[in-house]
Amino acid sequence: MYDLIVLGGGPAGLSAALYAGRARLSVLLLEKGVIGGQIAQSSEIENYPGSPPHESGESLIARMSAQAERFGAERIIDTITAVSAEGETKVLTGVKGSYACRALIVATGNAPLQIGCPGERELIGKGVSYCATCDAAFFEGLEVYVVGGGDSAVEEALYLSKFARKVTIIHRRDALRATKCIRDRAFAEPKLSFIWDSVIEELRGDGLLESMTLRNIKTGVTTTVAADEADGTFGLFVFIGLHPASELFAGKLDMENGYILTDEDMATNIPGVFAAGDVRKKTLRQVVTAAADGAVAAVRAEKYLEERGV
Ligand code: NAP
Image (cartoon, rainbow, N blue to C red):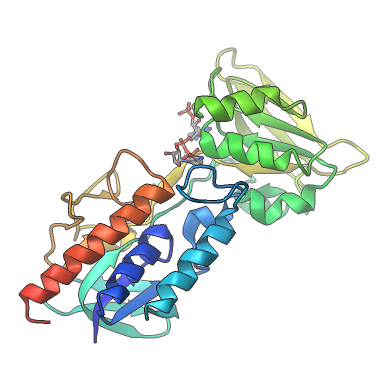
């Protein structure tokens, strides 16, 4: 029986584990995969206060993770498949075992959205990717396409331009959503070009991604983009947003569009259950706000436990 379980090892979860560990609570951090969440896949973090220039998500997370560990947070890698959260004792059941606690912080973050077109699923890892940091090196000297017009798409397109021969952003509108400083860098990058007002209808390839059909949503005209003959393939990186990883709590925690509703102290509708970071309904999803949520949730959880004599 732990005082507190933190579900999710991104910035919100690591910050919660750090604060709770420092408050001498017995803390278990549960993570299904690699510690770090979405941000660990980010090529560069420019806006986390105090980060050195050109810091990668991976390096920021490595420091956060070591710090949480220093304050005693235990860590188990397991995929949780069921949660019983309503009682005084909360039980999380995973593939490897069951874990009980008196308070729970949900910091499960969010996961990348897929385009949903024919061929996408079959070609994941064979040309289609959702992580530039992970896969950019496979496309050294090749052509690469990026889907999306937000901060992620444009930042990762800039990162990919260090590897690829040419990078083309395919966006469904004729204006980028990304913030001005990121847009300005993109428009100044000679390797970057744009296909506006277009969506991908189909991806094709026998083993590797070889061609795709685009549709201009204003004119309805479809075009085929095929790999350069000498290359035989090209890369397609998809950054069209994220969806909250809150399925485990559907019908239990109050949500809006899948995002968990909390008060300003991160408390949910179930006593003893808190939510922090990107999985929460909020206006700004950044590392700094995730880390702040984690700290608030841990301090609030500590108070909750104190009130129960723990
Ligand atoms: P996002 O801001 O939601 O942008 C998603 C982009 O994909 C939009 O341009 C959207 O088009 C497009 N899109 C959505 N669904 C699509 C579909 N089915 N087909 C084609 N295009 C589609 O997502 P994000 O860029 O991943 O960013 C998520 C959050 O992280 C944001 O709050 C962002 O500010 C933050 N972030 C911050 C930084 C930074 O500060 N350095 C870096 C990365 C991410 P429309 O524009 O037409 O809607």
